[in-house]
Length: 71
Image (cartoon, rainbow, N blue to C red; front, side):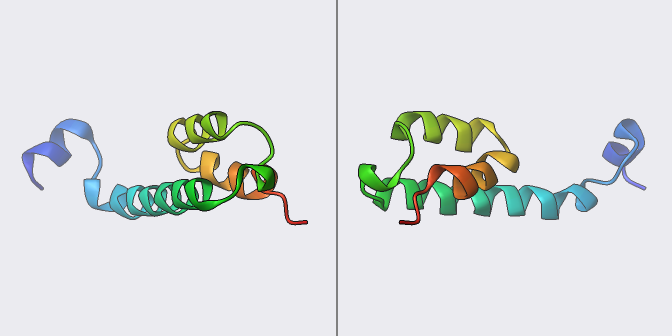
């Protein structure tokens, strides 16, 4: 084992796929938020941007479920 694994008690390679999924979800959600007309978004865009960025994995999921109007 390497020194970082020994000090922290886990292998960072196991966490890497979760971090990649989180980053991809955040980028896709922010891109969708920016491109959509404000009339198709429930609530202010800046609030959804904060939720997406600070909500980690759940923030983008909540935006796609509740933030967009699919009229």
